[in-house]
Figure 1 (cartoon, rainbow, N blue to C red):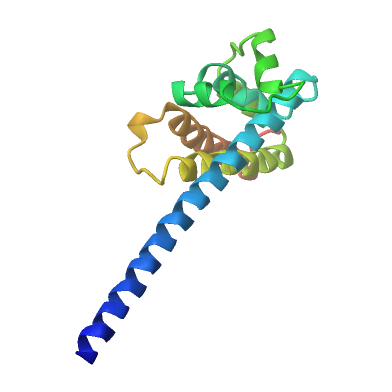
Figure 2: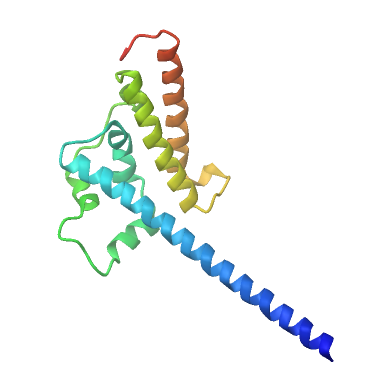
Length: 167
């Protein structure tokens, strides 16, 4: 009888730990979504105010056209709407028509290294927000950041191996 009671207590404790883990996973996912939204908002603010960094120019079309239906609905359903929402203001800007790699070819080595860090931030946040899904085919945004990371890394190697700055 005592063994049954101990077994029941162990099972209850294990179930409780499982529920806590589920709650923690949900909280961590929501936190990553918040960080991604903040990163996007910072880029949008710099773009709208005309003080963009290279990563903002790369992110511009993704911010304008790359949001999923869920993300658009979530943005519209916010209970507290700021007086100034830079993501909404992006609609007043023109799309970036130059190929993304062209932006990288005019940057100096130090600027490229800083850009690579910014690209990594976007990649990490996009990946974590999507639940670490390994299948990139369902995420053109993640695929874009992965590809631009490869191009930026290659451009850095080119400059370190004697390529001309900003060519």
